Every structure is written in C-alpha cells, then in structure tokens.
Image (tube, rainbow, N blue to C red; front, side, top):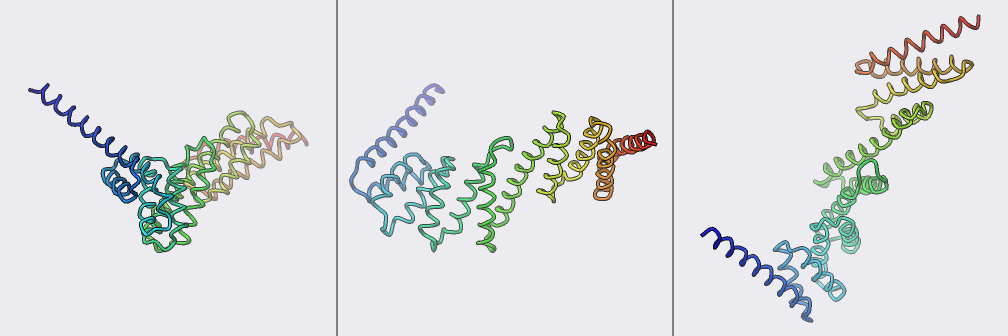
Length: 271
C-alpha cells in the first residue's frame, strides 16, 4: 500500500513538472504577446521564477512603452530577487526606479535596490567595495525618503555594513600587532577609533594603543625609549579618562607601570 502511494505521488509530481515544462515551451514559442504575458504571470504566481524570468525577458523589448510594461518589468526584477541573483536584481530595481519615478512602487523598489547591494556585501575579510556601495545607497535612500516605513531597516543595514568595515580595519590593526609592527599597529588602532567613534570596542582599541606603544618602546634603541614609553603612559591616561569602567584597565595598568618605571630608570642612567 505504502509503495503504491509513493509511486502514485512520484507519478503526480512528474506529470506536474512535465505539464509545466510543456506550457513553458509552448509560451516561449508563441508569437502572441498577451498569451506569453499571461503564462509568465501564471508562472510568477506559482513561484516558478526561472520560467517567469525567461518569458519576461522575451517580453521586455516588445512591451516597452505599453501600459503593461511597468507591472511586467516590476515582476521581471522581482524574479531575479526571488532567485537570489542580487546583482541582476539590483540593476533592474534601479532601472525600474529611474524609468518609473512616479510609480506607486517607487519607494519599495528603491529600497530593494539598496537591499540587494547590502546582500552583495561580503564578509569582512574580502574587498569592501560592495559594502561601501551599499552604505552609500542606503544613506541616500534615507535622505530622500525620510518618512518611509523602511527607514528603520535601512539604518539597521547601514549599521551592519559599518560593523563589517570596522571588523576589517580592526583585524588589519591586530595583524600589524601580531607580526610585531607595533608602530603601525598604534597608528592603525587610532585610525579605527577615529573612523568608528561610536564603537562598543573603542576602549579595546585604546588598550591596544597602550600595548603597542609599550612594545614599540621596548624594542627601540635607548635614545628613543623614554619618549616612546611616555607615549604609552599618555595613552594609558587617555584610557583611564575616557573609559573609567573599561575591563581592560587592569591589564593596561601593567604596561603603564612598566613604562613609568622604565622612564625613571632611563632618567637615572642619564644623571
């Protein structure tokens, strides 16, 4: 009984797929624009995105400047989106927005263009170009649609993109430190602080500046050490003043004490 049911189910699925393919091929060969459009819309409603996409693609050139072009093109763009082809979707959503600026769907489509760029944003270790493009587009959307219900989401996506860029920059600074390029590390961590002033990791960056200055001084020639230990002392004081409750204070104090003691020792040697 179970085997018969399974076989019947497989046959039903196969028949459905065969019918869909047959209807699709017939529509693709048809010279009747209205028929092709109807079939494309039918596939769209059934979420058969690839079939719908291919049919809409054949219709776009012949339907341009007709009254049905706008809704057809809207769905055409959406087929790319639903197939997760965000690069193509971003192009067509942008093109729709530029072609139909007064459309009732303009706000939605402009946001979706930005969202597709956001989806194209890679992980922090890769080229940040798409992340930066997404941030720029999202900010432009917020500026031009301040009252849109989608503004909150746009701000959220900007924050996520900014976090990716911060992670990338912070990882670069950590790499400098890990390979012993302590001067470069101190500069890089300071730059991360400046670029992301509202970061929740700002105290960590300041702590790493203290540590980098100390390590740099430790490896310097004696004539340069006092000045460079003093940089570590000053950086520690900035950590204390700026982040009095930081969890990094205790460990940073160790580098402060070592730096201060080394400064005193160096001064005594010069007497």
